[in-house]
Length: 439
Image (cartoon, rainbow, N blue to C red; front, side, top):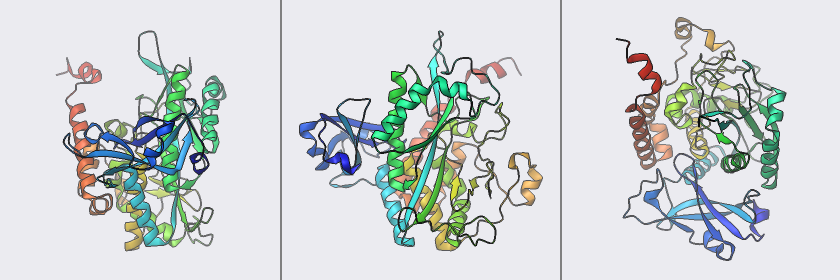
């Protein structure tokens, strides 16, 4: 935040994210802070996932953004400086924040508007039991429908309140905290902002949540689906556009469909629908992600995750929900890199705006309950069911390849295919138990 840029701290954390959205950093003593805002803090690019650099390449320089300096209350006398990656004195095309800034500029150029977003991070609070296995941190939690449960919200309230306080000190306004649908799962929502700021806020949130949880003897996990019998953790994105904050060009009270959406919003939605398969690779970026994108497998009776490319009014089984005057993409999960997610969504939406695409008819019914025949009759298609399928769609997508950049997409595909290969070569305990004496 700008107000902290002029304050003095003993230490500064020059921080950026890798291709997975995982924060990376160097600790810089206060007397050397200006180097962060000048040439930047230097890193070996080959040591950072997804930067497309070799061990013989130039330094990867993390150059600080003076508009995003924030205190870190869990690290006394320390501030974090959000950085963009530079190589050879220029913004690096494979740096996630650089990719997001380019997409936001493209949105501004095409529409004359700013892109605004809000992210809803869900996470699990876990601890290790006596056997060394991770279990939910809220002891004896076994309700089939634990959502909004007071008792378990209260159990971890010291952590939640300390986290909220840290976020407030960093200028992040939390307006709602709740126990979510799975045992040990929580959600903390903070207010809407310009797209880049929202991604910066989410990154700071994850850093704070994981560090503070550790101080409370817990693990804050952003794994999309840690427990097969429970719902997974989403990262729903709300979005709108306007000339200034508070102005909403996606809203139109005269909408004949009663969704309060403007023609611009419908075109943007049409782009999301048309590019859904390729978008899934960025929004659901892990092998584990696709165990969340199912209709069955939660003791609560719903997984709350989309499986079909459909949109509707207040339909939480749909790919996109329309909560009045804005769009909510329900596809992303907690593993998504917020910068890449923002960029991919913008390029998909811009495709709809440029081609004036229609999203088709809304579906306000329970998509989980529809048969394959009914879905086919309505022309509703399935989202990718695995990361390799989603990666194939991304590779074939001219829209996202041109938007995100060929070099970036090539590196993303390389990293993610390697991840798939690594996990596919492993035999899980469940597989062994099922097949060892089966045939």
